[in-house]
View 1 (cartoon, rainbow, N blue to C red):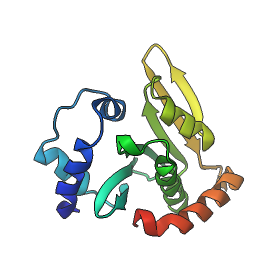
View 2: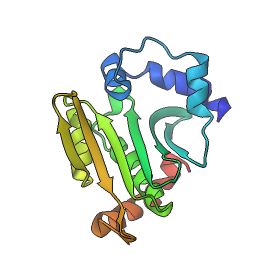
View 3: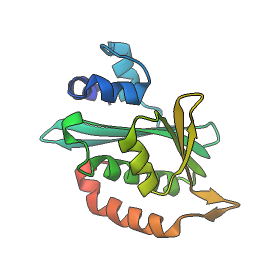
Amino acid sequence: MPEDEPALKHFIESVTKEDLYYRYFSDINEFTHDDLANMTQIDYDREMAFVAVRCEEIIGVTRSMSDPDNTDAEFAVLVRSDLKRLGLGCQLLEKMIAYALAHGMHRLMGITMPNNRGMITLAQRLDFDIDVQIKDGIVNLILPLYTNGRQLAVCNVIRIQHLTSKHTHNLGN
């Protein structure tokens, strides 16, 4: 929401340049008002964002944007640098997976860099297919959710839905 812009700006300022580089694939010195407005004013028909908040301070964000048919969505996760490796990124991504499943999406996809071991490890733990493209310097993270009208990864889905419902109050809706 537009009123979240100052909190989002503060959150981004608390993320290291390295983590921002891994997330945005370029050196970013500052986000403009327009950049922040685009992040806080989303099109709920094709986009979703979940924000983790502690004491009214944003500490993590996951967002997705789907294709026009709402069958495939690209996701991204960013956690405050000093809070990484505590499970917050996992909770955020699990919430996004549950959202994608509930909305009948077929695949959830992300792109990261080969050096972003934390994201790759998280994706592996959540059964994403990992496709390393050394020549392009990227790693594709792909989680099939449905195929031929059939839901996949049922064991993980049940675990994710349980964890997500248990932690929803911590991450907002």
